[in-house]
Length: 324
Image (tube, rainbow, N blue to C red):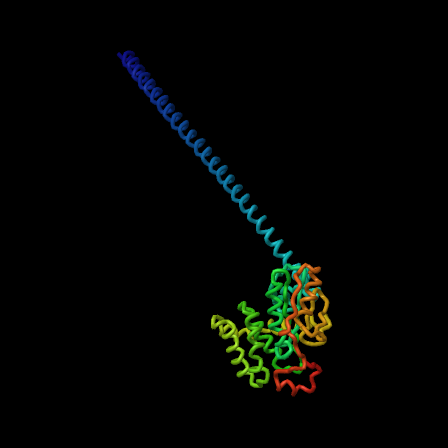
């Protein structure tokens, strides 16, 4: 009996051992499958991370390429600006800023205000008038130059420059007033009005009253379309005074000895001894144009007696060497 019990116990133990072995195998199989799944997920995660990194690198590369192009454009623009500034500095070093025709461009030496030009700016003939707003002879010259301008505007460039005379106390402030109007594109209109109404301001001693007179002339010149507030502010602009003074410096270089002076392509026109001032100037222009202009008839109405001073007050300037 004891032997049978022992065999029975051994058999039961063997079955139990087999059962445990099967369960162990099943556990190992489950663990293996879990481990494989985890490994697969890890690999997939790594692949996703790698793809993300590659995508980021590509985007950064594209962005850098775009920025590089913008920087190249910006760099080119900066180089161009530097070149422009260099050109301006070169002009300043020369003392004047002029183009090939002799027309002044804006620069530090002239208050950044270039020549006022009417007619054909790129013309091969340049007519420069040096005048003083308080000068009676210059006032008489204005309508003559207007007439010549109308006849030659398509062939000739006309420039007006200030040449203030020391004995004319308000000439400089009047020139500044014309430049102030010029900042609003009313230079020629203001110039004409200042000459036409010169008797109303040439002897004014009070600065405030003088400013008021200039304002009224400005209103007339602009048909009340100009900005009066800005005009009054510009009367105190140092750049305008610099422009006026620079014009006179140019006149000195051009050997101006009296006003008005007319220069055609660098040569002064001798009209003081002429019986017809307009014709003398036109003849000089025609010569500069190599005779291509049509002949002009003598205009007796333009005959001009330089000793005829329409302003009695100017006779008081005995210390003035200017006879006009």
